[in-house]
Image (cartoon, rainbow, N blue to C red; front, side):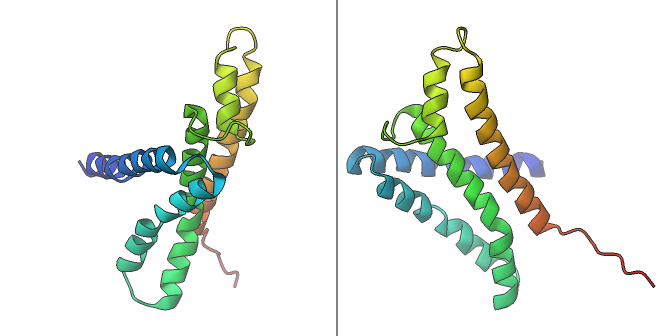
Length: 145
């Protein structure tokens, strides 16, 4: 039950941000500064949630924010590439999402054209996820006596 509620909360937090991002992009245009500022604006509630939970020590709060920073980066990378994949981005930008979307049309002719950008995006995002996990739960150091 706990996992179901957690999954529902993740959906409730991410879907409105993606919809608002598309609305802002259709109003303000697909400028790179607009995209980055809107994605940064959606990270404010996550940082505020981290600050509001737990101890109010400045040191512990900074440790918590640093531990969750790779998770925010992975979410922003996925969001940025999803914008490119769906065609809401500037086609002159170099984006893996645009490359995957273009290669999707030639999937039967050249499957490797979509494999390499997808693999690069997967490795990049999984690297940030592993960094988040490593910062969140560090490996205990055993002292020798």
